[in-house]
Structure formats: structure tokens, C-alpha cells
Picture (tube, rainbow, N blue to C red):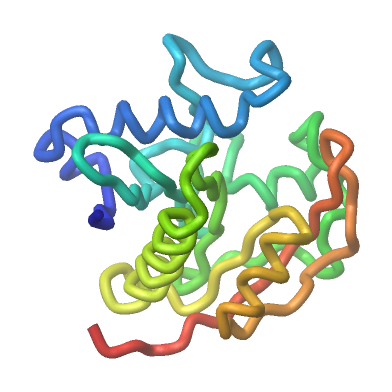
Length: 195
């Protein structure tokens, strides 16, 4: 099992990994609502999958087991920036604009952490290993990409898991309902780790 950070500069060197990541995202996010999940040809993507973003894939023997996307809060592509900032500006139909207590940040060392998933149906011991690899891959981005702080919108259970994992995580907004589930915005200070 390995972790790979993908960018538009290196996706060509990893064969079908990026495509497989988008397909795994589709399978994860389309559960019970495939008609509402953006994408085509079984791949999930949105307006934030731009050259500014980086994608982390945990994979083994060609199978993507989990992943996430990182987007700098300084990103701009047409009328879009990053998901949380755009939701706060009222550009999202799915996410309420009152998701943050403060104005969405914009700084080169702050990234948005989004599209986090772990493939369904994994045995519990494999799932725990994937969780650990995802966490370590996130921590590695401090040295590899200069990420000091991440903010994200995720399920309340994701926030609890990150806190149990030892991360310094704080709520950045109220609990809101998205697709019938409780979500919350978080801010996480990434500690320096020896690689």
C-alpha cells in the first residue's frame, strides 16, 4: 500500500491512477444518489479539480483505497476559488452560506482539505491502515507543499476521528445539515513531522 500525491505536472507518470482516484470518489460520493453526483464516465469531479489542486491517493495493486484533495486558499479559476469560500459567498446550492464563523481565509500556507474518502467494503484492519496512511500523507504535505493549516468541511464523525488521531483541530463553523447528515467546518494546524 502506498500514498501518491498527484498534480497536473505528474499525473502522466502514474498511468491510470488519477482516473482510478476519480472513479473511487464517484463510487464513494454517489452512494444512494448517483443522479446528484457530478461527473461523467463513472468519475466524480467538480470545478475545484484544477491545476492548483493536489490529490492524494492511497492505493495498492492498482486499486484506490482512499484519498483527498488539497486546494490552496489562494486559488482562483474563473469565478471560483475554493469550495468553502465559494459556499460562504453563496455560490453553492448544496452548502449553506453560514458554514463559517469568520470570513474564509486566503493565504499561501492555508489549504482546503476536501473530497476525503475511504473506499467502502474494506475489512476493518485494512480500513484502519488506510486511515493511518491518509493521515500521514496529510502531515507530509507540510514539508512537500508548505501546508501549515488546512480547513475542511466534513462530517462530524470525521472531525472526531481527526481529533482522536492527535491532530490540533478546532470547529470553524456551526454544525450544518448537508444531504441529511451533520457536517461542520474545521481548521487543523499541521504539526511538523520528521519524514
